[in-house]
Amino acid sequence: MSKVFHDSGRSMALHSGILCHPTSLPSGDLAEAERFIDMLVDSKASLWQLLPLTPPDEHASPYSSPSAFAAWDGWVGESAGSEFNISAESYWLEDWALYQVIKKEQDGKPWFEWPDELKNRDAAAMARYSTVGVIEEQKRFMHRWTEIKEYAKNSGVSIIGDLPIFIAHDSADVWAHKELFQLDEEGQPVVVAGVPPDYFNEDGQRWGMVLYDWQSHEDEKWEWWRQRMRRMLRLFDMVRVDHFRGFHSAWAIPADAKTAKAGTWQEGPKGALIEQLLEVADSPRQIIAEDLGIIPPEVVELRKRYDLEGMAVLHFGFDDNNADNPHRPENIASDQVVYTGTHDNDTTIGWWKSAPSERRARVERHRKDGESVPRCLIRLALESAASMAIIPLQDIMELGSEARMNMPGTGHGNWKWQFEWEEIPDFTLEPVESES
Image (cartoon, rainbow, N blue to C red; front, side, top):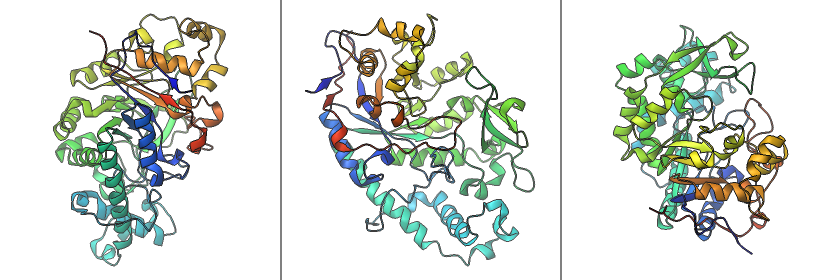
């Protein structure tokens, strides 16, 4: 029997969708994307949210990529077509291709350990490299991705991409645009990104990505960021900006510090950058601001000032008795996208199994007879006032912690979960317009 996650007498989220990275498909790549889109259509969902499609780091994380623009070459095979006009990608493509070719020649060493003429991009030294093969990889991806995006459009499905705010020090972007990042004369970071100590981690988190030199971005009229958003909106219908609070302020940790404790807050560009991104976009509704965690009111005000949608996560809504908790079902607003959990959360089954009695009691007040906890939270998401409800596929499948996508602060065992088609139950996500 199909599972229908709604109750016809209640107000519903306007659009529903599934969070599932293509690496979680049985093929592990884009070969079965159309089949996944068909499943969304059959379930009455109209949104597919992905994690970043950029190349992952050595831990398979797509959030610390060696490129802010390029697609991972593992998405499509060499047999894929490559008929694609790549001229729109000229801003970044040659830099990425050179970085890849030189890095291979240098046995995988990071760019800041290359010989000086390559590290410093001497034109004569770089001219001896052929980039045709890497460019062909990107053309194959774009050929295939264009097919998928057109299929989704014709099926009534919008695709939501993910833009990590920070990138890796060893990346084509930092190598090609050193002046845009906080580096010393040797190309080493002065400070690195992270988050301060909090209730969950007494040492904070030291992510290690480089931080931006915002004055240099302003001096170049924000061209790198404008090009980055243009690229994202060529690939996706909407974009989730990860760690949106970094536009307001970022936790800057001295590069030689072993933990995040020694960090301090650095002011971000705030509206100056957001206005640039909105000039590139057709509508503020194309940008979702990830405003999770310990967020000061000024960050929420910044988001609202530019009419951007924020995020609410139901897992966080049952952590306390605070009537103002923005993640409580009754507090979720129409300018938010609601999730049961994100890729950084445990699955709802795993979250429930580890829940203290106080949290369980708060959830039980919302459960209907015979309703599982994942089905309860999915129903609450669809009944909320949010504009969109996004459900991780693991919660549709009611899987436990073994299916968790990522555990923040750990470098191993993440980003590996895959499903099999026969394991997915019949289900329907059928939100309707909120009652006036």
